[in-house]
Each structure stands twice: as C-alpha cells, then as structure tokens.
Amino acid sequence: MGHRSILKFAHDVHNDLSNAASNNWDDLARTATAHPYWTHASSTQSLATKQRRSVLAVLMNSAPETIQSWQNGQMWLELRHRLTALFKCLESAGCFVLKKGTIEDYYQYVATPSRVAKVADAYQEADGILRAASQQTEQDYSDVLIALKYASIPPKIDEAGGLMDLVLAVAGPALNRITMTTPDPKLNSLAQQILRERAVLFEVSNVSSQFGVPTLRIQINSGILAVSGFPLDLRKGADPVYEVSTRILNKALDITRPSSLDR
Image (cartoon, rainbow, N blue to C red; front, side, top):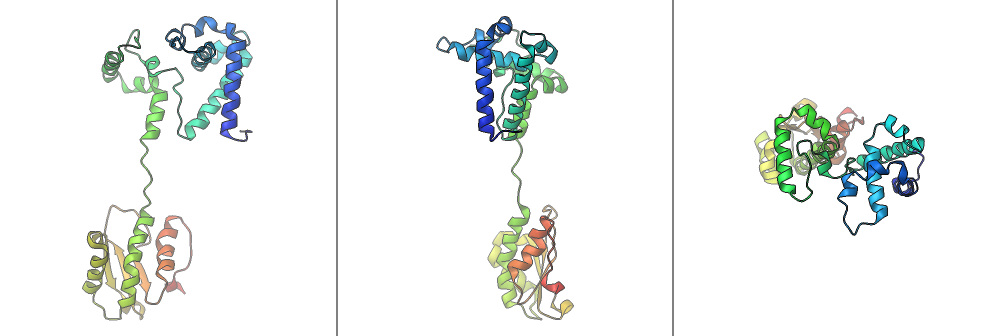
C-alpha cells in the first residue's frame, strides 16, 4: 500500500484525523456534537479527543455523497478512504474497530440507550434481536459479526505432523525387529507398548513376502483423520524419518520425493 509499516500508516492517519477534526471542526460540528461520543463524553476528556472520536464516527457512517457535500468534502472523503484502508489492514491482523462508536450505537431496539442502565438496555436489545430476521441483524451488526467470526475461527490442526510423530515412534523399533516371518500380532503388540491407547489409530503388518525383503506396513485405522500417504510401507534398513516425511508430510504439502521402495 506504499507504507513502510502498518504502524507508520496508522500513525499518519491518526495525525491527519486529529488535525482535520481540530482545524476543520466547523465542517461537521452540527452532526458530530449530536453523536454519543460527544454528548456522553466524560468531563475529564479533552476537547481534542471528543472532536476526534465524534468526527471519526460521523465520517465512517456517512454516505460518500453526503460527505462530498460538506465544506472541504473532497478532503474528508479522501480521509475516509484512508481510514477504511487502515481498518482493513488492522482487521487482517485481528484488530477490529466498531465504526459506529460504542456497542450501544449499534442498538436497534432501544430507543435511547442510557449509558447507565446498560444491563437493562442490553437485555431489551437482545430480546429484539431474537425476534428480528437474521439477515437484518447481520446487516445492523456487521462490524461486530466480523470480529466475532474472526475470533471463532478454530486453530488449524496439523494432522499430518501429529501422525508423523506417532508413526516414527513405532517405525524405528518395529523395523529394528522385523524379519521375513515376524507375525502381525507381535508388531501390533509392540505398537501398543509404545503408543498405548493411541495404538488403535494404526494397524501394523508384515508385508515382506510382497517385496522380497523385510518390510513393515503401517495402515491408518481411522475414518476421521484426513491424511494421505497410507498405507505406509517401510523396508528394513531404510531411514524412517526420510520415508515417513516423504510419504506423509510431503504429501500433505504436495511435495514429491522418491521413496526407498521406488529406488
């Protein structure tokens, strides 16, 4: 966006907003002084802060054609564009701004939020939301919903990496002990000793006869885990880390490398 950093961008926009609110206050004073940021401001709050907050709320909630009609309309419109761009940058980093002001400024079913009886007002608003159409609520509370949706995104689970650790825990000892005739129950018993209850995720078998050399097969035993690379065939003497990463992790990342069984 042509800025060295988001911090520099935010600093510049904040300064320009403060200057505009102070130097061009008369352009929208009539509207800004009617906003709760002005009417409900603390007695200890500075004039500059009250002006900046109320101007920001009015600016972000006015139609472009309305802004264009103001005194110095083009300057205000350009400032709004920069604020919108800044807020989008902040949202991508998980920081959200309630553009109307405080949460009470989003209320649709409380005629005049008191700023004192907050619990009663919130209850009344919640009751109204429950009775309203969901599409209307999504429109009224769009800024709030964007933040809630971001916060509710679950962390991505690295199934491939987690399974690879478990497979490697079994593969090394099993490859060390396997012969052409090692029975499957013995291999699964070894997996049980190592993985305990997590051993149910895998089925371990001896497929040496298929390859002519002692070869271990590890099959995933779950229909829930979506990990490619199974069944996993490991030849005795092979490097388990290389083989497992080649078949499981690299497949998850769509990287192609030859297995020892292909060489």
